[in-house]
Image (cartoon, rainbow, N blue to C red; front, side, top):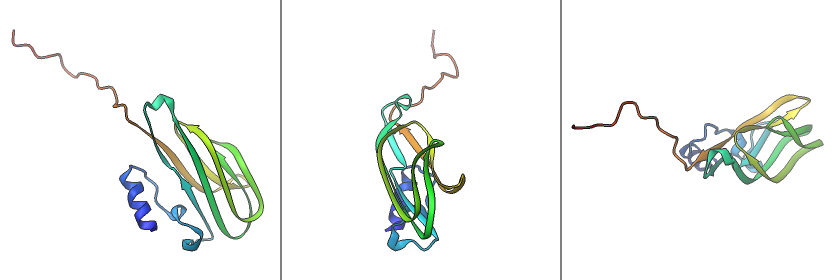
Length: 130
C-alpha cells in the first residue's frame, strides 16, 4: 500500500516519498507521519490552493513536538506518542515540519500545480511570406 501511494505521488510530480507516507501499522522508524494532500491543483498559481490539510504522526517514545506550516506554529503536543491535526488552509508554496525545540524532525514541501499554462514568450517574429 505504501508503494502504491508513493508511485501515485511520484506520478503527480511530488518529489517526496518516504516513511512519512506510512500508517502506524507500517511504521518501522522511531518517528513517522502521514500528510495529505502534499500536492494540490489550483486554477491559477496566484490563487494558491485551498484544501483540508491532514497530519497524523506516530512515535515509539513520548515526545514534545510542534507542527509548523510555513514557519508558523500550528499545534503542539506534550509528551505524546501520536498526534492528529486537520485544518482548512490556503497555501501557495511552503514547508510543513514537525519540530522538537526548533530541531526539525520531519519535513515535507507542499506543492501547488496549476491548470493555467505558463505564459510563453515568442522567440522570433511571426512568419510572413510577403
